[in-house]
Image (cartoon, rainbow, N blue to C red; front, side):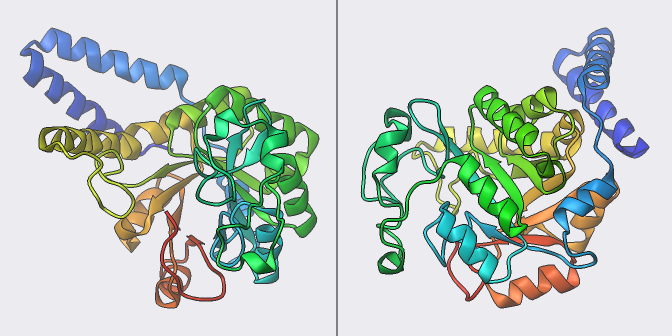
Length: 329
């Protein structure tokens, strides 16, 4: 639930900003009231926190290690082999990326192309499922010889394997709000156990809002990284133009504010997946007061894992369950 202090701060800030821009108390009042009514009318209520904890913490009282892309450092990412390897290495949860073939089949794939992870090349949305199925998903992995011939799985194949292994699933949705929500809804109806063993996550608020529209009972989370519009995951600026870089930095500030004060409430999320560098005890407490669980990413050293699991007591996403490694962007 949004705290009263949040309400006052949010709408007071909007009022002041509009007043500074328009110098009109009438317009400021009208626009602030419109925003309040919009959020009140179109927001989704949060699901019960007890249910969120049940999904996110399958082992009561213990923070969970979530295998990123099925623990892509230990096995070819987003494959059945990775899911099985994660389970063998002690994971209770896996994060899997949802993509689509050219003929609309939901599959597991992180990138927009198949070049980085397979022996093929080309855009994902230009390749049919039958073409994708011929590729070796282990071709570029450091343990490729151990997983020769591993196929790109369908989303349903991955879900069935996770259910079999009793793994909680973090569905990471990259885009395609309507198609993704429809595909996931079909799976939730076909496999009702997913309602208490999975969560739908995305960097795109539109995806999460659409998921809540099509099935309000699905647990959801927003994913966020500060400065994601202006910089890549490793901190490299996205744009060579200085003015464009600084413009996007201003957009980053606005996006960050929206995530922490508006979008989470509009979508009625149960968890917030955040890049590890901003996480602290105060940050975890901030979200706890709002009924939202914090999940940090990507945690790849034992020292960091111990800190997040034993001090902050929150779930973390990792590329490896067996050794320290560099982050996989």
